[in-house]
Image 1 (spheres, rainbow, N blue to C red):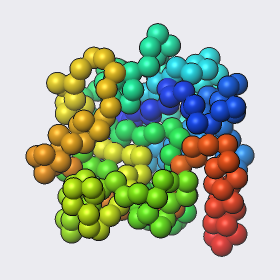
Image 2: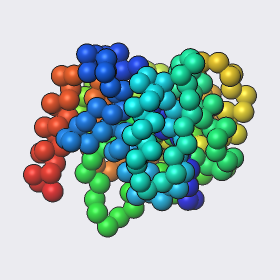
Image 3: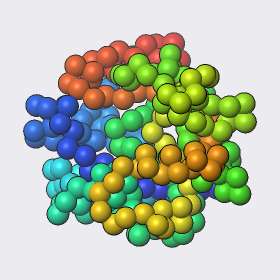
Image 4: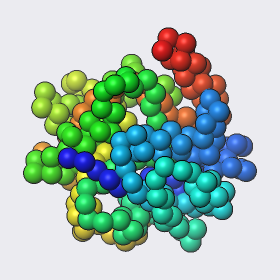
Length: 243
């Protein structure tokens, strides 16, 4: 399967990143000289995505100005200045700007480095793995030891065929959710219009044995606090040194 559209969740307040985020939205905080959201957008471009919706709220004017200057794909704005809708409600609102075809959903503040050149990218492999006949959602996942900035806990257990269950319910072969999944927008047709957490739909897919995952190539980073910026940049420097 080829996926040509995406939703990037970028409207959060970034409260744990204060005081940096007092004056700049978290997705525009630079890591190794590059705004975090550009790692996400670049990954979408490399995977052949042509159109992406990005939701905005905190310092929305700065976000819109940056996104207007980004080249490589068409970017549509889902404006949440009036009220935050959490990741689920923001996704439902943003999907209305896209077609009913399968879509990538990504976070603007989670990214990866170290993909091997000459082979399909992580998102291309995720699109190829996603099978809507068997799956409601297909996630990128990563081993805990290949993460930087994470809380040290596994999110899911992965079966041999990629089927996912909550790690807390069935603790074996643990993996971390890497902040990207593929789905059909129709999976959220019964979702509320108000704010809600997308984890509700992860659990709905699990209940039907239709949540699956495939493993990330490379190293995954999350930057949640000002102190974590240096840790992330050191990881990137180390990867570049051995590339």
